[in-house]
Length: 307
Picture 1 (tube, rainbow, N blue to C red):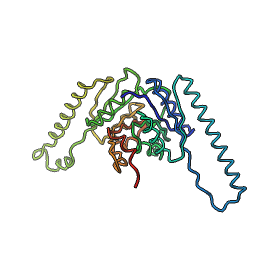
Picture 2: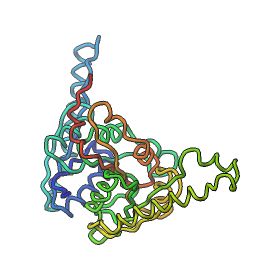
Picture 3: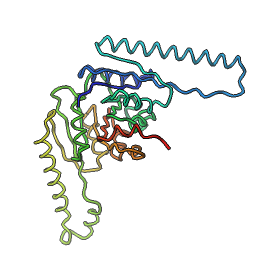
Picture 4: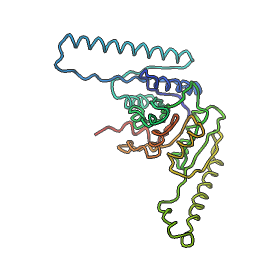
């Protein structure tokens, strides 16, 4: 995948500024075009208000929008000063849906959004815009969190279950990192459901350790095939026991990774609302930025219309 177009949510908050910074760093790596997307609220009519009050409210709204326009213009000028092409798209409507519409219209390869919460309990609060953007997106979505820089990532970690979507996530991860960066790949293995109960039967009647050995042997064989066949950035594969979302987020926190990459399906219809437990868990508990890589059908989800 080559990144030619990046769509960035811009609401003039500190979080969106961090997203813009990271998007600029990635755009410089690929000489990509940036679209700053500003979604404006659709002001609901206020009943039983006199003309004088309506006039004042109109003045306030106009002042806020003028200030927003100046803020966006400043950010565009800063991006242009880096030698990058940038455009602003301002529309009325829900930010997550507007971002997806713009990404679809311009065939963007990457959407970048900011979210609050870097550490502690606050990081569990993903934010409605980031959450909706991921669900509606026709492309990969980078949710920026934690330390942000105007540069590609340098310590990525990829959640790997050896499925086509996970391999696709690994391939796309290489586009967001500095050239030559080693990508850590983590496969979280677990014993088959019910294996724990076998211990009650005793080792003599049910040697559960053989099940564990079989699971590990299979995982190692798949890991070896991945290393042998992968043609992208250097990779290092680790096999760790435990629930996938918990394993990868804990590893990222312990090892100081700046990006977690996770794949999810991109089916049409209501299935787009189901990110998958691993992607959902990673997004909510990650100590750093998260790249959500959709499946090959992701472009169809943004065309789905609500009933």
